[in-house]
Image (cartoon, rainbow, N blue to C red; front, side, top):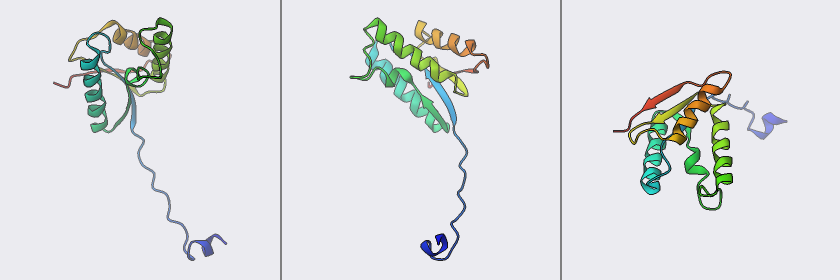
Length: 126
């Protein structure tokens, strides 16, 4: 029956693609938010160019209509959600061109707190 549906030929075998490396990105958010968001987007682009599958939770969760970073409870929720991703990532990548702030330090501490300590890699764009 299946052979008749596909013209008498067996289906071609699926080609397995290598899974990209899952990484969580840390870069500044607080302070000059607009400049820091532009920098975070550049970090995501850099990570993608390296063949990684990055997540930068501060880009995702702070978008309008998701969470309000000025509300302490919502900020805590976003931080916890971002840190949860660290547990499934292959590594935490910290972009350091603009320095390392308290939020980034918390992400580094979270990576080191998992039972299977997540490697931390430091990078610069410039």
